[in-house]
Image 1 (cartoon, rainbow, N blue to C red):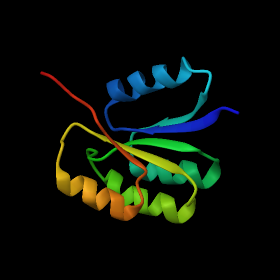
Image 2 (tube, rainbow, N blue to C red):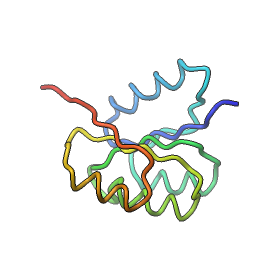
Image 3 (tube, rainbow, N blue to C red):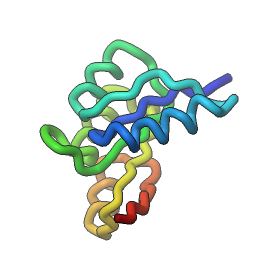
Image 4 (cartoon, rainbow, N blue to C red):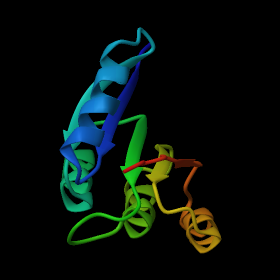
Length: 110
């Protein structure tokens, strides 16, 4: 069984990197890739997802931590992996409280 993956990031380049990784795997299938938490919630209402890779801070609208709480209410069994380039302990604590399953740090160099 392949795990169905949704990618949520406001940066198209980051989404593309994750999309390529998922598409090149036999264990995962890309079910969606969107630029906002609101789009992710709408997609999860219509389709079954197993894993969500989601940015913590997005340009506008709902942040990834708030979206995690909403997604877990909608689908408690979904696995949510939050991804951010800003490493702050407060994010980790808040994320755990909302039900996040893993927290990944993406290193971005200028």
